Image (tube, rainbow, N blue to C red):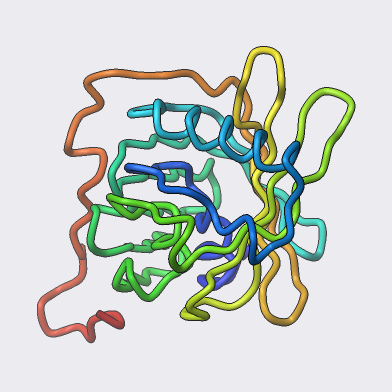
Length: 215
């Protein structure tokens, strides 16, 4: 199965590597007091998640799924190791997102600020400036929070899903400007410590004379 680079970027958009969290744009979104309480609870949880690891299953808009391992380290760093035979590896080093496909022998790089990742990988997330929370939905065992980039640098929206007891991020769904959805489900998310810096470094393996990506 081949997933597009766009799908990969969208799937990573909501990686929960928040820095300091400011007051959300409740008034703009018209959220209730109960909604605000859930957003504040989620923000506090995400801010406490300094390093983490999990298994993930990513499902694209056509229902095709692929699994792998994810490592997160705030601020700005993430690594998605996709299971064989996909040959895909996506790494954010804090400034650049690199996408390597060993099967297709491609390597692309994108400025973090130019991808949906920038919304939630920023060192300091300002939910009152640039990000608008548009909906809070309750479920039997948890809740979800939907947000979009208020500055419109990235199209679409992000929905983060949480379990209540214990408070845990269970995944996220990205909807792009065309309404296509990419869902990432996290399995066994656990806090980590001392994740090696080398996990978040991905060098271009191609010869120097081969055309570079889009940085």
